[in-house]
Image (tube, rainbow, N blue to C red):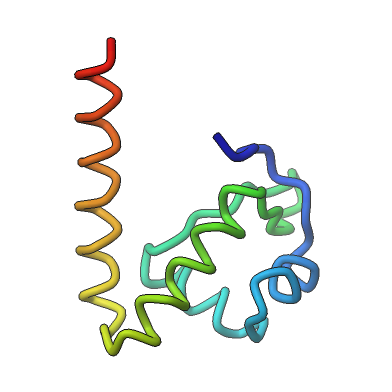
Length: 88
């Protein structure tokens, strides 16, 4: 399971995800990603966030819009929760 601690500034996260910084801000405004914040409000992205950004890019490449991507991500999270529950 990827690390969920916020470690990377937005510029580093954008570079690691091969995206523009403004895209990360849009995805946050749309509720697709929620990076950690410092006390001063600086965004900090985790390894898990980077993987999520890459997944968003894949879905965009497949032709989904941001609303559709949000729904796919919700469903994928639900499937993961159910699998964990069944594995208990």
